[in-house]
Length: 187
Image (tube, rainbow, N blue to C red; front, side):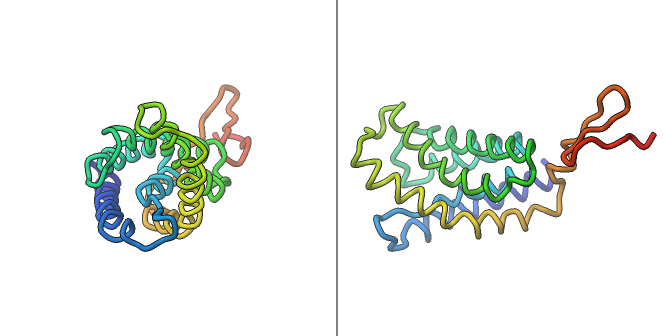
């Protein structure tokens, strides 16, 4: 286990404790609270890429599935966070300058994917009432909370390996293609 993994695990556990003990008890309109685990996974994926985002998302989601008051099937939240973490990491690997847009997109996609997973696994019937009363406020709440939470996660993990440093590859003809475009090889 590397220091990155250890730091990610500590952050996930701390965020889940904060989510259950503090954030879920806030008297916000509609009884909706931001999903801090989702936002931490997106921030982690923006720094470390798709693979780390998917693994972190799965672990955070699985922890969220077993921590009370979980009202869905075990594995639903793990699936959602795994997919969001992978997608956020993959997009930022392909286009590193899209970080802020990916953070907001991941924050909005999480509740939508959770509703789809809930409907697919028979947990929540999707209808106009669920969409208007629960989904829209959840998306708005996550999007509003995304900038400070994702920024904080990026600030914590940025000192380590960045995705932009790993996206360079060599092709025949001694031309290197990376995140900034074609560069001539130094050799």
